[in-house]
Image 1 (tube, one colour):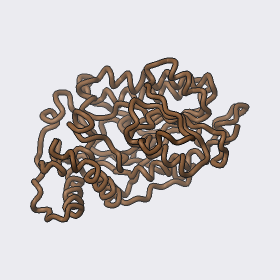
Image 2 (cartoon, helix red, strand yellow):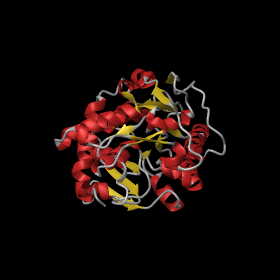
Image 3 (cartoon, rainbow, N blue to C red):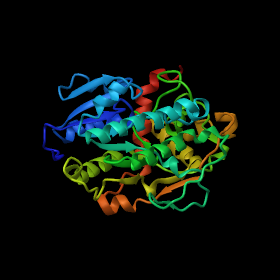
Image 4 (tube, rainbow, N blue to C red):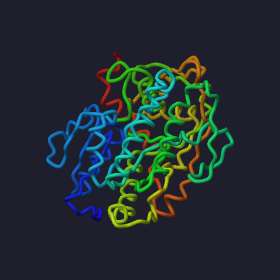
Length: 361
């Protein structure tokens, strides 16, 4: 069976479809193709507008259940976005983080190898490890991974994701592609603590929450670490470039080869959007002032806190993550295009509109 955007008989399984990336992908699949969607997640509050769509089937479950894994693997294309991926949980729930990011994906990959499905597995840029401030571009197939001390539970997520990648690559007969996101941002990202989640979300939602509540933005270890922030819309465009390039081969059960995009890992990031976390805080304060129509000088100044004070004992970090994006450009003709300020304003505007009534909670 060939994978074509105009083929209404194709069903894509999106695991984690109720999450940040998954909700955007599901919308794009329904808007750009005639495909059907089999969506799996533990909640679907981001998808209220899709719950009655006749092209969708939703299952409230997770990959801990073998019967769920077997059902997912019956579809020709499986996109696995499910993961525990917030730093505060790396620190306090290391075992559960490892189960979520290694045990469950390994079971799904094994099932897909048996059924012949094409598995598009989302990994993380964190698999590159504890990078230094002067680290150069991180290249998918040659950059070594160096992690912090074994006692630093910060690396539970990264090492589980790395092991999952190695397991996937070693499985005979599995048709696979790995995606390594570099700080995707956009509407629906994460949660507001005390409103629709607990703990500490990732940096964008963290800063957005503080701004909406009139609290100072906390700069962990001075906010010196640098990241490349990528619009979730660019991420979705990457996936469609991937589907178009790899579909016909991946769905050909008689093909014994894995050319092009199969058996490959891809960085997905925007190298033009690199900022330090301190610089990010400054940009977000300015954007928030613009969105709210207030003077930025009326907003609380950021505060510097230590990593251990903020996240707890065992915190560690990467100081720079600059992806090489040459492979995605060479094999898919893909390049992220949305500027940082545009992505941040869209994200923060959505956050303010969505959570304004719960800002004092």
